[in-house]
Image 1 (cartoon, rainbow, N blue to C red):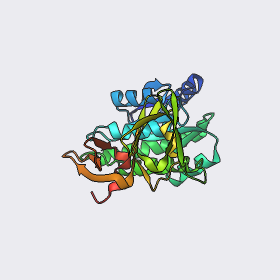
Image 2: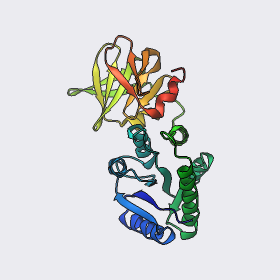
Image 3: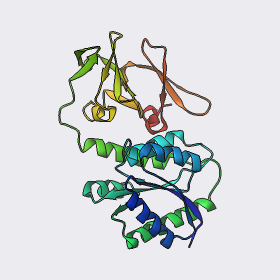
Image 4: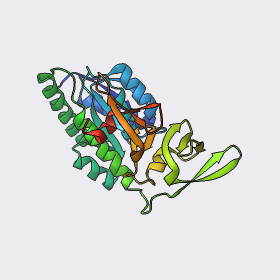
Length: 271
């Protein structure tokens, strides 16, 4: 089977990207590599622009990891187009491989081996063939979202300290303010900072990335509802679903509506 298809390669090491492209050309002549990205943000933009059939995403990239880029892409992906098949590229890491195997997500180890890549190509061709035979209506993203949630969760749990964070050291002008986590209502990523909204109506800034904060917060108390947005679950007043099926929520005493991404919509199953 030599199924015609398109692909995007996201790999920050140019020589490795070139090697993967070369091996794919040999193993899958009918595959057209539409673009190569060197970081996660570019990978998302190029994927939305080209809408390839297959994505080869490096796990470790500048700006965003391959997992984070794939998660962002699921939220921006158009409903009428089947989501690309995902293959993660990773250096040898027994933990990562166990996580991928548990989720039935294909992966390629660095340096790329032709025999292992040939197995991946065969799986992709078979999956695309089955998809072509059953292409009716919009694509079902649920399996992809479930896999990404599990992989992202496993990645976070692997580095989570035993004790949740109790205090945040935040900047307020030229001063440092100690903010008890119990006072925090919401956190929002903003460029190199995280905006922290507290119960007394104040807003302070943290230099710690939101991803690192989430590794130290109690996930039963704080729910991530978007790549750049975390809320205290007990302060959620209402959740609304619009005509397209997208969710948004409002916190108690707040008028601003916060978007809930597809990746975290499962938190509101009753909706």
